[in-house]
Image (tube, rainbow, N blue to C red; front, side, top):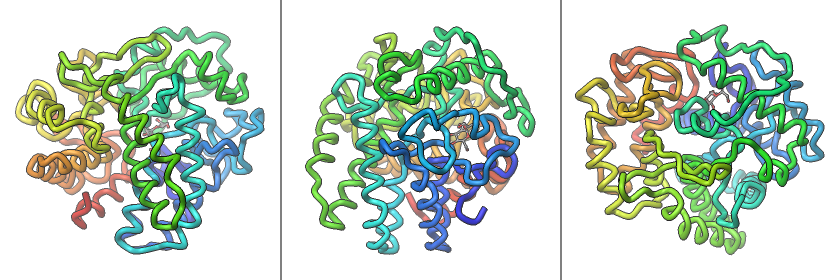
Length: 412
Ligand code: 9WN
C-alpha cells in the first residue's frame, strides 16, 4: 500500500503491529528502504504514552471491523494523529531492527527508531506492570496476537457482555466462520473494547478494572528477548543501558516463579484478575526459549516430554506437521480453527529460533523444513491444518511470504 503492507489482501486491509515487523524483515532481503519505511509507518502511530498500537488505519475505513471510529481513541489525551486501535501487540520490532542492522548496517536508522522503541518498552514495563515485577499485562486477547487461543477461555468465560454497542462482525465475510472465533467470544472481545473506550484508555483504570488482565508467556518472552536486542541497539549508538538492565534483571528474577509449572514441566500464562495460573498446554510453552529464560534442564524437559510427544505436538499421530498451536491433549483442540490447533509460520519460526539456542538444531531444521513444505505445497496461507497441510484463513498472507524469504535465506 506504499508505506505499509496489508497482512492479508481482503481479510486484513490495514497495518498490523507484529505483522509489520516480520514483513519488514522479509523486505529487508531485497528492498531495504521499503523495509525501513514499513517500520516508520508503524511507529508513526505511537501513542503519546509510548504504546505502539496493534492496528493502524492509514487509509481510513474499509470493510474491516472494528473500523477506526469504533475505537473512539480521541477520548484519550494520548491518542496519535493517525487513526489506530487502542491496544498493542507482541513487541517483535526491536529484535527485527537489530537483525536487519546486523545484516546491513543502518546506523542512522537506529538513531531514528531507538527513542520510540525505548518508550514502547518502557510503556510495557510501567503502564502494564500490575505487581511491580516488570512483567507486562495484556488487557485483551487481541493484544496477544493469538486471539482465539484456548489459553484465554477461562478468563473470558467470566465476562458477561452487557450494553454492547451495535456492531456488525466482518471477519467471517472473507473467511469461513468455522475457522474464526465463536460468536459468544467475539461479543466478549467487543465488551472489552467498549469498557476501554469508556475508560478513555487510561492505564491505571485498565490495570485496576479491566475484566481481562493476564501476564502472558508469549508477549513476555518476546519482550524479554526484545529488551536484550534493544540494549544492543543502545550500545551501538552510545545510549545508556541502566534502565533496560533493570527490566532485564527484574523479569529474569520473576519469570520462572510466575510461569513455570514444575509438575507438568510446562510454562503457563497467569490470570492476574483471577490470581491463578492458566493450566492450558499450548505451543506458547516453548516461547521462553526464544528469550533464554529457561535453563537447560527446563528446555530438555519441554522438548523430550512435550515437543517430541506425538500425543501432544510431534508429527506422527493425528498431526503430520510441526508445530500444532495447541497440544492435541487439550479438549479445545481443533484442526482448522484459528489459534486452536493449526500451524502458524510465525510461531514455527520463533520456536525454531529458540530450539537452536538450546542445542536442538535438528528439530529446529525439521520445523523450518515443514514450514517451507507447507508454503511451497499449499501457498502463503495464514495458517495450516496440521493434520493434512491444507491452508486456512487468509490466502496471500504477508508474514507467511516474508518468512518464506527469511527461511529460504537461511535466517533463524
Ligand atoms: C485482530 C493480522 C492479525 C494478526 C493476529 C491474528 C489476527 C486480528 C483479527 O490477524 O488478529 O487483531 O481480526 O483476527 O490473530 O495475530 O496480527 O494478521
